[in-house]
Amino acid sequence: MRRYFLTIVLSLPGIVISEAITAQGTITGPACVKPSFEYQYLINFTGKFKNKSEICITGGRLVDSKSECTQIDTFAAVKVIWDAKAVRGKISFASAKGNAAFDVNIIEELNPGTINTRKSQLIEYNSKREQITCGPATGGSCNPSYEYQWEISEDAIEWKEIKGSTDVNLANQEQQKRPFFYRRRVTEKTSGMVAYSDIASVYLNSILF
Image 1 (spheres, helix red, strand yellow):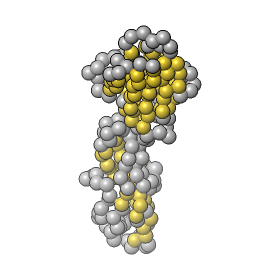
Image 2: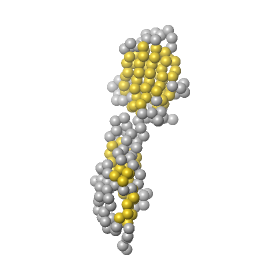
Image 3: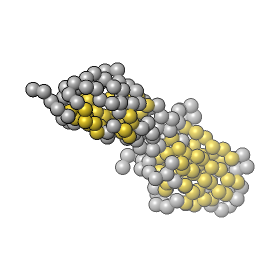
Image 4: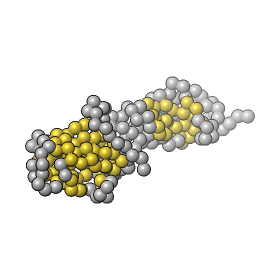
């Protein structure tokens, strides 16, 4: 299991502080997280409490307690693993003196999109195929930015980039004299994640030798 630990430096990107004035406290930690990874959050409240207070997790679980809630003192460092099935998470603090909450965005796995039209084509020798369309990519970051690149192959094993084909869909190109396979590569620029669509195939009705 990968482990992520946090040093409290308020100017770091991706660090958010949630403060509840009535409780005079803070919850500090990463606000954009990957599912199934371990993250650390700091809970710090001023003043002394006669009774222990409770912290609960929505959309994940506490590592040390193996549950969603635990009793803590006025200060605690808690470790959380966020759920892959959740899109949003929350850390909630409840005490006799007040409450606080910290919202978290859970990154979805990068979905490269699916070819939705002309996935299989049969064309005549030396004619052009029709445009291949593919759904947009999703996930991969809390604020995703995608880069598309279409690729071509003769055997669906070795692939090479199609120069200039960086749109969501693959437009018509030159006339074809042999079968080809096509797929779209997606790069999420914030996280660097890469994924590939399914494969479209173009066959020839007749081949001249």
